[in-house]
Every structure is written in C-alpha cells, then in structure tokens.
Length: 484
Image (cartoon, rainbow, N blue to C red):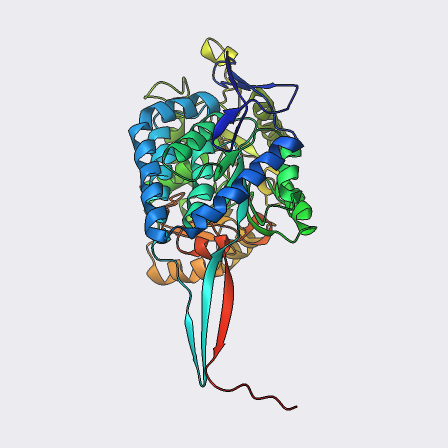
C-alpha cells in the first residue's frame, strides 16, 4: 500500500504522527493510501522552511517568478491524464469531468498568475512638495486549507496567486483527498522554486487549527464549510492574520418565463448534478415561473433520468460516487426529511445498490417539487445531487425569496430580457451571478462570497489585493517645517 506523509523543505517526509489514516476510493471502497498526519513539530518545520525560502523568492523579480509558474503549468499539462485519474480515484468524480474541470483549471491558474507576477504594481499620488507612492508587498508565509471536492484545483487556486505575489505557502489538503495535492507539491518543487517555498502538511481539523493559530503565518486562505471558516477565523484572530474564506452556499437559480427552455434545463442540471452535486456554488434552489413550470419539469425529469450513474473511470459516466459512505448517509437523510416535510420526489431519491454500487457510495440524482421556502431542504446546504424546484409569479417576489438566506456565494438567472438580466443581477446578494449559464469559473474572474459564504476574493487581478499588503511611502522634497 502506498504511504504518504508531508512535503517539508523540498522533501517528502513521514512526519511525526503515530496513527495513520486511510484515503479511500469512494467508488470501490478500496484503500488508496495510508496517510501519516502532521504534528505541531512538523508544522513548525514547514513554517520555518517557508520563511527562509520566502526571502529568496521575494527578492526575485516578477519575470523570474513567472518563468517558474509557467514551468509548473507545463508539468501539470504534461501529466494531465495521470493526475485526472488520480483525482477520480480519490474523489469519485467522473473521468469525463476531471481532465478539464480539475487539471486544466489548475494549469490555467498557474499560467494566468505567471502573467500577473510580471505586472504587480502600486500607484503614485500627485501632491505638492512631495512624492507619494504605494508598494504591493507579499505577506510572507501564507497558509492554505483545502476542501475535498476539487483538491488540485483548490490547491492551485491558492498556491498560484500566493507565489506570484512573492509569498511562501504551507498547504493542508482535506484529509479525505490528499493525493493530488501531494503531487502538486512535488511539481512545484521540481519547477525550481527555492527549497521550502511550498510545503504540505496532512491531517484533520487539528492540523488546520495549528496553521490558523501559528504566529509565523501572516495570512490564511480556507475553502470549506461555514463552520470550518468560523473556526479558522477565530483561530486567526489572536495573531490578527489576514483571512480569505470561500465557504458554503445555498444558491438560487431563477428561470423567468421568457427563458430559453432548453438552456434553462441545462443550466439547472449543471447547477445541481455536476460532480455529484458536491459544489459549493450549486444552484440548488431553482425558482421557475409558474407559467412554464410544467414544461420545465417535464424536460428536466426526462433528461435527468437519462443521466448515467456508474463507474467514475468509465468515460460514459455522468454521475460518479459520492465522496464517502458517511456523506451519502447525510445526503440521504436530507432526502428523507424532504419527503417527510411534504415535498414531492419527481425522480431519484434513492441509494443505488447491486454490483459496483454495493461497494461504493452512489445515489440517483434527485428532484424535489412542491418545496416551500421554510423546509430544511430549502435552507441547508446538502452538498449532493438534490435539486429543489419552487414556483414564483413576480420578479420582486422571487428576488426577495432568493436573497432570504444566510448564504451569498452565487446566484443565476435565465432570461432573454436584457434589462431584467442586469436589474436582477444587481439585486441578488451573491459574490457571483451567472446570466443564461451556470457554474463557469474562469481564472480571470474574481470568485468569492458575501454574507456567511465568505470573505475576500480568489482569482482574477483581485487576488493580488488579498495576497499582498499595501505600503505607503511619503518622500518630502523640500525643507522640513516644524512649529518649534
């Protein structure tokens, strides 16, 4: 059996943990690797190595850093299918998705931020008798804490901007999906970064807490649940760390009466069933204008029932395995609660059994109708292939209902009315609003949430603001006048 530990100071090491844990293929139940968790001494070593390397990295100009980031992108691209297959085994997502959604996104991220590394700049301020300017400077050592649904993509979304801006990083992947993050650590080291610039520590929430409270770390970026984000923010408070948080969501997708019906159904399916519904931005509350409700549901059910649930390694599969048996139990419990509350299951709603399904964590994509806004399935983030469909009559009414949630990560709307599109996009309380599409996240576009869905932004040029701090420099050009 494969054994992995930590990647510290340019070397893969076992670490000090005494109780390894297994990472499991959720489609087969097979153990992929035994993982030794980090202890506090490992985290201290990783932070110390990062601090040493960061000084050398910061002294390099943006063009030199860009060359290294492009080499990382080249290596990821060269190993595209190998890494995609490893991601499929660790997460259960279909191989039809992983090369593009996971590996290509990581490649794009490093290429984009290679360009950004050459263009980080401050501003000058024109004042009489003085020269005033600002500098964008790295924080120093940053920590990244990843989630299990897009392991290598999330690791890249944190590493690439951090390194482009001159920082070092200590990254902790989810304990459920550590494999591709470890591969990325090796790729970054082999691309020619200073030894120790990028370190990886494995473990559960206790290791994340070590990072969020460590005095040698200046900034922490976390992707995870709202509860996780709150714990990280509380831990960061003692040392006043900068924080970036991409947390949970319960996003609305509004389908107006004039929408293209085929496109609306496609958007709803992408917003709920891609990656088994295990996406934080998913539009799980689908509001459909009453006048087109029946036609929408007829096509939605027909196309959903045609989806292939099966072996994630089969290119024909649309829906793979849930991340774990425990998570499948949680999702199925929400399905049971939705039924008990009076919502109608139009299709799906059951765990799959027989053959491969008996070894893995599989369920059929589920659509609920007759859902009221106060039901648990309408309020909680389920994080599985469970869609709730609501009726609405009026634009103001549906915007108010869409905003009536503690979350604010994303939203979507489908309409042919240009004025309505911009009006509703402005009114929705979300960090990202998609119009006539859903769940597209190009690296060029800033990404993040509002309300309890997060703080700060990842990706785009906006990421520079969160991986650097601004220093103001005032240069007097004349005599110093003093009143004494």
